Image 1 (tube, rainbow, N blue to C red):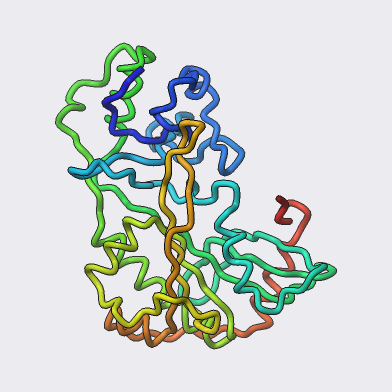
Image 2: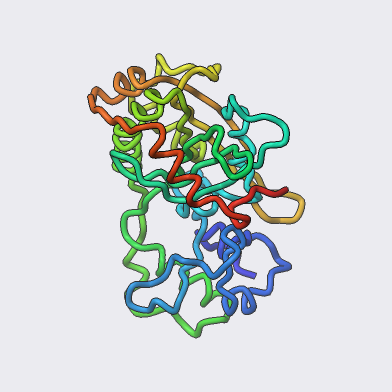
Length: 285
């Protein structure tokens, strides 16, 4: 068993888990979070899924999530947003609807409360994980080589380390959120950013977060939910809600020093959501 890899999670399994049959995992290329083949593939070889969910990085070898789909484990993040559906009532159905486009960009998911397939309330949910500088592929191949699944990695891989693009990742998502938050604020709805604790900690250090509410207010339109990874008794990692923050469009603008406007008619979002509601989007436990 390889104990020196910087790959922390490979196709959903912890590399510390000695009970995993890695040959079977590599053959299946299955993402348990999406419940289908891993969609992160090599551009040069689209039949091969990359499969790296989480890597170790830095002197402290922190486990850093690099795939946003890893955040939807057991759909915990959606359950943790139900309280923001202020118009939700018992008897309503809950639906998870991906990739809705609004002015300023698209939103990864909408959590919608519906009755008779008519949307009563909704929450926008964005996922953000760390972008890497360089490729993690060489580390992936070294991991498989150490497991004797590959004969040896391609030549020159030892000279191709990867890094973490902390600054660009944080700045990009904050700018994108600012483009969208006035839409939700205008509609008296909520937008939630789901991210790992390491990324939120970086944002708090590098941007002006001192005015952001550390005791989140349901009345605020912008919410931050950070999750940490913990190694479970099953020798695999699991996400756990770690911290929640909230603010409004002015607070987000103050953090970034930016201004933007985004308006959309309430009826347009409702119609788009209702058109996508089906049995396949129903949230079940």
